[in-house]
Length: 381
Image 1 (cartoon, rainbow, N blue to C red):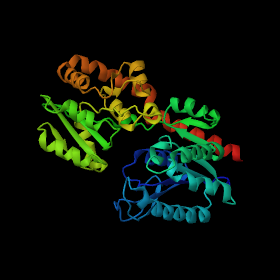
Image 2 (image 1 turned 30 degrees about the vertical axis):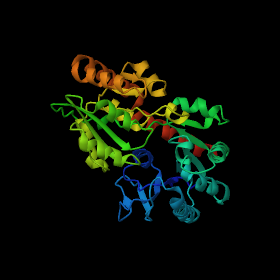
Image 3 (image 1 turned 60 degrees about the horizontal axis):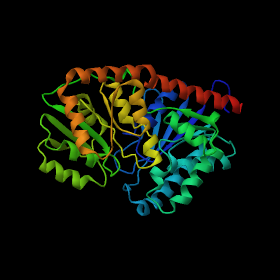
C-alpha cells in the first residue's frame, strides 16, 4: 500500500479505446471521484483516437494505437499479445495498487502482474460476460473457458459481476461468494432526457449486429408494420443483411456504427429499446445488457425474451413484456399493442422508471463498487 494520504493507484485494462464502452468509464469516474488515482490502459483497435485523455476528475486514459478487426481471432491474437506486453511494461514500472481487468481478454495480464510484481497488487476481475462470450471466437473453448474461470476464481481478490444470477452460477463453479460483488451496468438517475415523441412509434436497436442479438427477429417482426419505425445502429457479421433489409423495408433505417454522441438523439427519441438476445446459452440466459437499464432509466417498457433473468426482472417489477424468442408473429403483436394502446404503454413505462430508481441506478452501483475497493485495500493493510 501507499503511504497515508497518498491515493491508491488503480490500473484498468481494456481492449477497446475507452470511448463508447460505458461500464469501464463509469467505474473509472466513480473511483476517481472517491479519491483513487485511476488510469485506464486501453487498446484503440479501431483507430478512433489521436491522443490520450485526462478528465477533470483526474481519470486518465492511455491508449495503444494498433489497428485490429473484430471477430477475426487469428489476425487479432498477435496484436493482442503486443497489447499485453504494453500493459505489463506500464504495470511493472508504475507499481499499481490494484489491477482491474475488464473482461476475460485482459485477465491474463492481471493474473501475471498479481503473481509476478514485487508490489503484489490486488486484482479485480470485472466479468462483463461469462468467458465464453469472448472465447467462442477461438478454438478449444472446452479448455480455455474452464482455465479462465479457474484463473479468476484462484487469483482475483474481487470479482465484479453484472447481476445476482451470476453470483449463484459462479458459486456453483467454485467462486467464493464473499469475493463477488454485483455492479450492474446502469445509467445515473440524472441521465434521463425528455422524451422526443414523433408521429410514429420508434423502435431502436443498437450494438453488435450478431446472430444471437435478436436483430433478424426484430426485422422480420416489424418489417412493414404500419405506424412503427425500426432504427438499427451498429456493426457485426449481419451488417450486409441489415443493409439489404433496410433498402427493402420503408419502415427500417440502418445508421451504421455511431459514436455515443450521435447515438444519444436516437435513444432520446425511442419509444422502445428491445433487449431480446437469443437465450441459447447460459451467458445470454443470465445476462442483463446495458440497454435494458437504459430503457428503464428513460421510462420505457422492457421487451425481453422469456426464460431469462431479464424476464424475471420484468415479472418482478411489472415493467414490460417477455416474448418467446423466435416467434416473430408474437413480437409483432406485442409491439403493435404497445404502439396502439397508450394507457397500457404508460403503465409499463411508469413501473420501469420506478424500478430503476429503487434498485438499478448507477448511484446504487457506485456505492457497492467503492465499498468493495475500500474493503479489499483495507484487508491488504
